[in-house]
Amino acid sequence: MAPTETPGLDDIVWILYTSGTTGRPKGVEIAHGAFMLMRMCEHWEPAYTWSEDDTFFFVAPNYHLLGIGLSLQAFFNGATIVVVREFNPELVLREIEVNKPTILAVAPVMIQMMLASSNAATTDFSSVREVVYAGSPISLGLIKQALEKMPCRFMQFYGSTESGGAVTLLRPEEHDLSDEKRLTSCGKPLPLIQIKIMDQGRREVADGAPGEMWIRAPSIAVGYRNQAEEWSKVFEAGWFKTGDIAFRDEDGFIYIIDRAKDMIVTGGENVYSSEVENVLSLHEAIFKVAVIGVPSERWGEEVKACIILNEGFEVSQRDLIEFAKLHLAGYKCPKSIDFMTDLPVGGTGKVLKRVLRSPYWEGTERYV
Image (cartoon, rainbow, N blue to C red; front, side):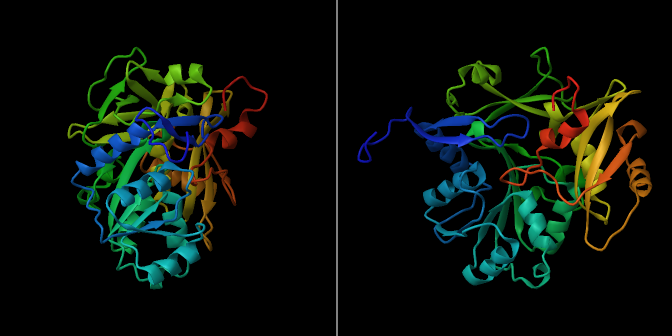
């Protein structure tokens, strides 16, 4: 298409690649019309209070929906956009004081890195009206720390590259430190977006029961670039099958409890890694944690926690396992803990659990 031509609503305007947390990245084809409709969903959502008086801080990668999608929302509202050349916590903290942004969009790992900086305590966050976070699950420990240390409104959005934007929001008024359970929710759908939780037999489950999250939205992608067969596996009768295991509570809030491929089956019982991670994240010694399943002769799989400690802290494997037992059923607790200096992550800081699992399952038939 020539630069002077107006794109049709069905024309592909972007190809964004998935993060590759559970497999090879796929090129997601998104049509012009999908972006227009996503903006409509956002404009009908009362929680979006953006205006031409706002300054949006573009610090997330521009190849990821968090950065590029929200920058479009800023454009549609006539907001100023300030682009930071890279995410470096010291640089971002300094630029916050210089450019006085009102809206900051970040992945949870970026919040964690900023709060871990020695300059965080003296940074003036008063200009930041709202922090929008997305891109990966946030631990209970981290969001509590952020709410206590940053005097801003927080809003979480959940979406996928295939959804073309946010499908649920945990809105600012729902970030309540007195309700820890609600802080682990990804919220409720935006206008025009439908969500259902499905069992393996393609039946919708009752509230409180886990199943795969399916979404129907006007912004759903056209397909995967040159991978029509792969797209047919995840798109059915207008619904996108996310691969995320979730449940809906009696108030309509949705809780993502794991990726289907990350669920651990130990002794016939399902263990959702996010539940274990949320508990361990509350321990003062833990900086970052990822929970995976590893081979077990007795149980088939057993729970392992891979942990990075906060600087200056020492804690034993036994102490952390005992801490987990205070909050979790025995079968959900880690049987072993590996202390690490780093975890394999993608471009937005999401832990690549397939890479983390791979050495433990080498030579077996289990997917990694």
